[in-house]
Image (cartoon, rainbow, N blue to C red):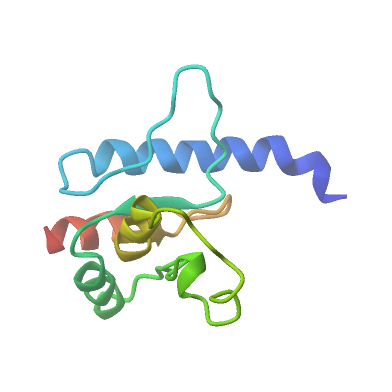
Length: 125
């Protein structure tokens, strides 16, 4: 039943992502980039900031939903520590674990709510 709505939902997510990218273009965040030959559906809208924890706390105080997906790299997960072996330390994964933050994005996201998120992010910076 829900599958027939997928294209419309993805289009709405893409519209929300475009609004975020435009409004936050000058913020000191690394925003998702869409390659010209790709078609992102934005299941998550993940930004990066070296001050991620401070941004996260600021958004919490502003009443904005936010998540940190994948806070640990594989070698930091207790259950995997003995099973995951890397020749070299995965530095990019470690940087991502320290800097990523997901902003709200879902098909039914009200524009007013998204504007609240944008304003809270811009107020931090």
